[in-house]
Length: 594
Image (cartoon, rainbow, N blue to C red; front, side):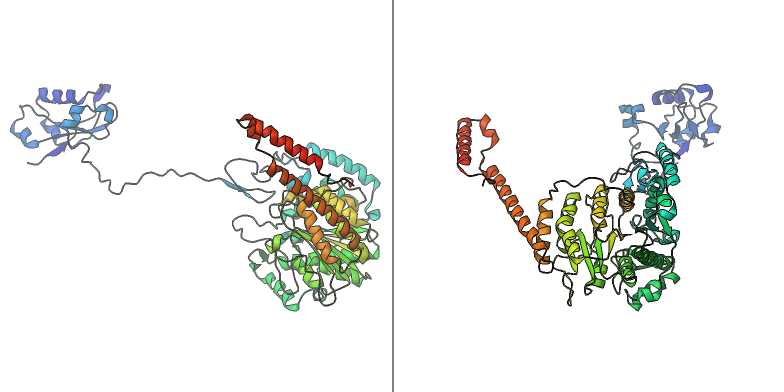
């Protein structure tokens, strides 16, 4: 007969577990007398340790000789290797070869690890892990920047009313008692319907041009008591089709309007629209047009257009670079319709305003000056080289100052203002000034990667303020770090209100790349603006001295013996060479000697 499995019952009364040899001896000495009825019962057995076990024996031997010694085969299903002796393993050769269950389809259990991912409210960059501080900008995951703007603590969680908020409220009450909206000289253009313009479906991370940009600026202005408070609000209106056709083609206007009937659409892979985008774009352009005419007519001194979507990339026939309608171009033509003969547009957004340049590069009555990253055309949108000066009789109406690298800071910008922007603007003699104020060249911006501070922006605003007797309109363009954009906008508006800039001008020392860029632009623009001639000669001599100094430093580094010689076997030779070099340098005339 074949063999079958015989299972015994659970050991009663907590009987101590016996070894395999003891189990065998017990079964053999009893001879299985009186136990025959249990052999075929197939009841599962469990040792005192909770492990199941089987007894294997030949039933033929049981039937033939119940009184004889029976040597059952004991197999522990879940026996640990430490519980087995070498004799057990030798006697049970099939212990490791045969299993009661088929495990051919067995797969290792994979532990599911949930990856924590969150996006920074300040810069939109992705962060991994359970940390609460952004790895890129250092902003707290739950900071109060949307409630307090740039006055919120960057490294702590928003906990409701803070000491900063209480202090600012006290200052604002005193200020409101002295000021009223009627005698305010700075107007602010804003409408909450522009917040509805948004990307419907988020891609890999939140779109940088988002409604929180305006919320952060509004929170900063409210916390500082500037708006509402010291600034005068103007009512919003949607611009008309006739006004837009002075800037854009009819086909472009119809394309933007078509998005009102589409839940989600894209003009380019990064220029989105939803059903509210066309209305937001009309409101933004309408506010800029009304601010320009209101400022030029003298009803207010100056203004700030807190608008979106931005506009300086929008050309005659296309929307691109997050921009739908060109707000600065609409404002310039509105100012001219109100009586301005010459309009100056200064664009300090980190990206070149290719749309604004396209619209006015044949118009001698509008001077467009742009300071932007270019890097030989490798930086978006690739236009704006120094050689693009205007066309068809309007040469010189476009002045491009293309930075050759990132990281450009206050000194380079202010140096360019002193030696290019202000001399050309003064010679042009505008009646009205517009600033395309993108704050993406600000320190901490994830797209611009430059280093302009709020004090730098306030200084540049102050330098342009007196050009047209204070008739100045600042229009928001880019800027994607909420703390940078809100603090910079607040600093600019304070200058519009008559407060001084963040710091006084000293001896501005540009970087080597900055000085080289300014010289290249001056050499080109001298053909159209003769006032640059004297400055160019002076800067060229400064550049020559700078290059000679650099050559002397490099030559000294090449000829000086290695420093480790003084501690080695060639110590004497080291001192001889150093002495000879020192004597030779004394014999040469100094670089700055007369």
